Image (tube, rainbow, N blue to C red; front, side, top):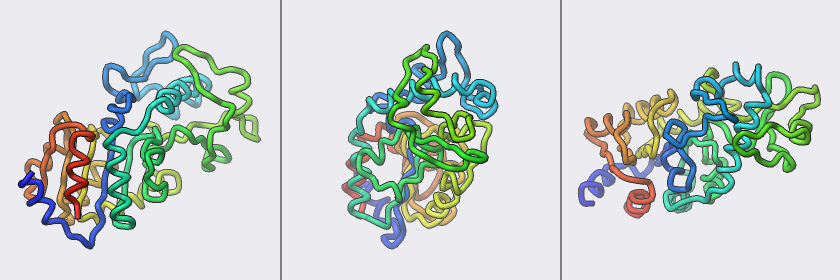
Length: 268
């Protein structure tokens, strides 16, 4: 812990602490990662790769199938509870206030449910409790209460379809950034998230595989501006590889529940 304290002593106390979370932080809450053996990419008896079903192209051809998949996943997210890692980040925000920002790739909503404020949580990949309607699907709304969930293998019920219909008679779409789409500030607050990364005095990555673009760019931007870097992850990944060769970085090998309470306790 002495090495960690020495590293944290180099953090500029006038700059924000920016945290980036991936699916790994929610594993301890019982939500499998996308690409792990318990991943979700199955509808009925059909198996898909993430790049097949999690796309606008697939939704445009099979919207009801995609909605069933997301409503099945939504049930798992709602059954999960925030873990010690999530709660540590709530404590960190309470202490730092406007010097805190949380960029998350997760769409499970657990950070806000744990107590982090929505305005400081940048959900750059969307939110599983939201849908988009209107011309070009630009308007974000909450999924209606009556939509409920789906089980593995279910088909979309008539009442679910009716609840998801927009005024023009088309199905709304999930508010999720798909694999064949790009980040847009009005929908994903992606530019705002990058701006926070550029300002960071301390940048912490947690449970991310580094498989998407914005997290990698955000970490790179923080490092180029001299931020202290920490990666919390039980498995090697692009972030852990980078911080081990960075003179102001460290890989804390383990889970967020194991490390985050310790790290938060040591941040001024």
